[in-house]
Image (cartoon, rainbow, N blue to C red):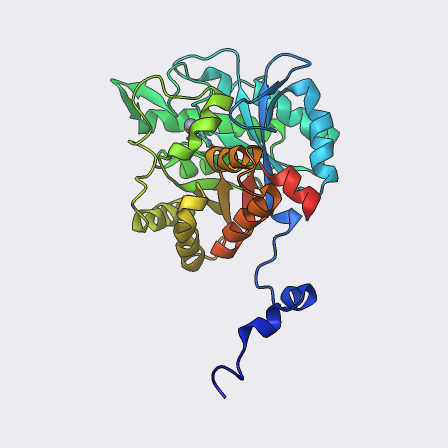
Length: 323
Ligand code: PBG
Ligand code: ZN
């Protein structure tokens, strides 16, 4: 008995309880990480025009927001800082009283059990908007490493639970691991943005984080979208340097890469459902062109099905409220 009419695949799809019984992928609130943009000043909650439903919060308004996130069951936030002062070496990124460092302390003080993951990069802090030190128009890899390591250390000192370098310099995981270990932070894990592509889908984020490069683009350090074997080499390299978890970013145009990384490593794998992916869904939903809830849950489930353990998504709060 191998085929129709004895075999009918529709039998297991007839009712919701039957479908639930044989469902292969389960999206859960505990898989989600919610990104937050933090600004200077007080009493400020600014909309991000390109990302409906997303705001930039001043530090004093974070407790209210993170209590809501935690109450929904979302286990972690990913923090991005937007300083008032930018310079060519991104000094606000590693200032002990910088906007992100204060945000970390405030969040851990108000909801200690919420995991605080910090984005470690310089682009929000540099006047030129690049992710490292610029020398003769080129982002200098090795001179950037020390500043990234200082930034990660300052986050750990402020109380971060996990540091997540997103700059794509070679050797940054090693540099960060070394400085954390030398300073008593051997227990702090590194989530490396290992396979991060030079993507058009970061557009809305750059508006939110004021991090658009002033000249050129990020293609000399972020990956070329056509490449997947190189993604495996990036992952291999970051693991060799001491990454505890790895990430593929963006998610939707790179589900094949998520799957390849999943099959190549046993390390925990995160995927970043980036700003442009969020804004596309929101824009279409606002026009009534797609069913918002259905589209969001389908997108997040697809990322999980591709092999991600952890999904970083601006949809985290709304998805949590539905799950
Ligand atoms: C900074 C950084 C970016 C994102 C995360 N960290 C932007 C970039 O590399 O230009 C993108 C996040 C998103 O689009 O949601 N290095
Ligand atoms: Zn950057």
